[in-house]
Length: 413
Ligand code: BGC
Image (cartoon, rainbow, N blue to C red; front, side, top):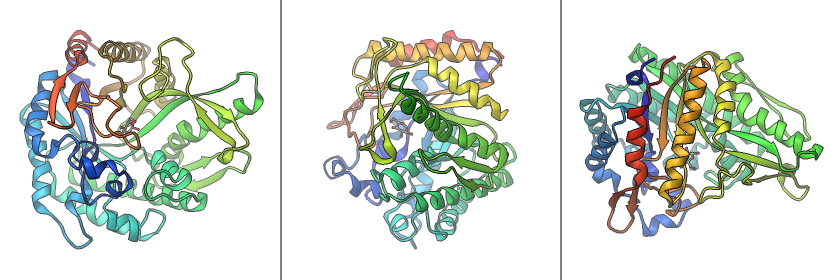
């Protein structure tokens, strides 16, 4: 595979760039009353596509904000669909392949209050939207049905820290099943419309290690976390069955109709997590980060652990489909740290490819600074810094560096 075939990209999500008054997250986090437009990308998209073009990438991953298209259950805003189609057209004119995420964490308020994911009706309501969307959106080959469905379930149904805010394992399992039923239906629809469709989900993968190596409980939790978080979904795509080990309880099994419903596998990789047994915590689990290898921590306290990318790529290669890193990035105000981070992870990809792992793309998260879930505007992931008062975009040194990396690597398989 030559460099030109490899997808070099940047990734964003609509809500994190442009907000939306009709989305569940707008009421979840008070920041939106002060900064409703976040980066004002909705109006400044032309300028941002120019920034993408200047980077020299050949692809751009972004999402479509459902709540802008259907602010209420019986209203469809054609103008907004046209807006997203304009972005797609502009990207295609500039030889930048669009990769669209259909669902990236947010929902219209009416959907999540009346038809939350654990209710059967959620499938019909979501699919009505998706069918109409797919009918009206053209000239896109790469699609991600859901961004990080596991995080949505863990945060929205177990921890309760993100919408819809439940803390109920049974509802979580129902919600998970419904989401995978939708994945299957979307996969089939996209292939009916366009035989060149390349469809996946974006799955967050991490490395899990025990907090104290010789503590058997920490070790057990790390093992369970790895099986739950990284492996079970891969088994779902291979066997149509997901087994979820729950610490100190019996493993839960759910049938999911997703066997083989994948044209590539999207991996979001950021960090290594250390697991600590803590009887005072829910399910006895405490997550921690520590800087063991001396690569440092990000501004969000996450361990920088490039080697881990190789581990997850190796594991995901079991799927026998091309792998694309749909997100990898660092929250830092230090440009040098950002450049080192990018180089270290791209080096790992180069090494993985040289060992025969079929990696076909890398998307840096993110093009510009944006709203970070539950953290606000201070987690600076962007290749371009954003002044959230004036909406000015200012290049970090990492922007030119990323272009240099893209030009200097010639990945072959
Ligand atoms: C999500 C992004 C998020 C990023 C950094 C990923 O889990 O898909 O929306 O901004 O991580 O936390």
